[in-house]
Amino acid sequence: MRITGKTAVYGIIGYPVKHSLSPIMQTAAFEELGIDAVYVPFEVKPENLKSAVEGLKALNVKGFNVTVPHKEKIIENLDFLSDEAEVIGAVNTVKNEEGKLTGYNTDAEGFIRSLKEEGVDVKGKRILMFGAGGAAKAVGYSLLREGVKFLNVVNRNFSRAKQLGDLLGKFGNVLIYPLKEGTVEILLKDVDLIVNTTSVGLKDTDPHLFDYSKIPEGVVVVDIIYNPPETPLLKAAKERNCKVINGLGMLVHQGAVAFEIWTGEKSPVEKMRKVLEEELYG
Image 1 (cartoon, helix red, strand yellow):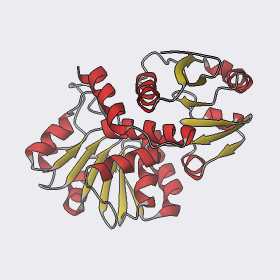
Image 2 (cartoon, rainbow, N blue to C red):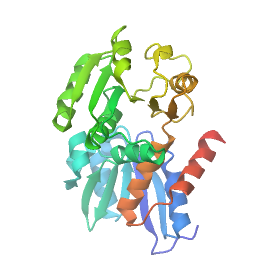
Image 3 (tube, rainbow, N blue to C red):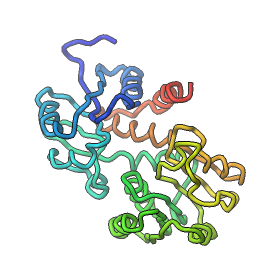
Image 4 (tube, one colour):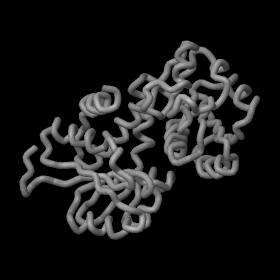
């Protein structure tokens, strides 16, 4: 890597930030296209967020990603928001144009691109989604924007699910259910695609979201977890002859969308995927 006075600087802010895979992915993308830029991690404590953003502006950092715990709080430090970021209420990508900062949420578009890449069209489809957190906001919004027939949301915390339903209900048919025995089994009888946006499945010891033997044969099952590459949900779905998609595609494509926002260039998706696969799976 050759750094000169012309090298553009990009990065990511979070706390902690050591676990982030974005530096590996974005650096590979810059190198692949021969763009004179570097991408570095900045560990920013919550109490230092405002001064950090001012510092990034002062240093003319061209753009940066935002990870936990700053995705929502950073909004008050930005000049403009994209439509997606405004609806979802969270920002994961910021572009600096002559000192004016615009916040974007690329998770929504990243999720949809990951489905389209696998040949999955959700228009007019019936969706069952688990979770009501930040990822669920982005995924739910993206599905409704693509014209799904209806979105059933199931979550342990019903009041949180209701908040999500109130937010997303402006964009399509959204129904909210508590996660309890019997409810999911009824919903499974009328579904085309199941998506898990929760952290259930990160560990083998996690209790199942529902009785996985009840997954209908032939539906599409998506889990936005990317490590492990095959969660218990996806393993069970595969045994039921379902098309299964893990979260690696969403991770790659949200980064690819950010890259395109910053550079105006078509992102080298396959290169970005390759370096992530090597880092995650060896």
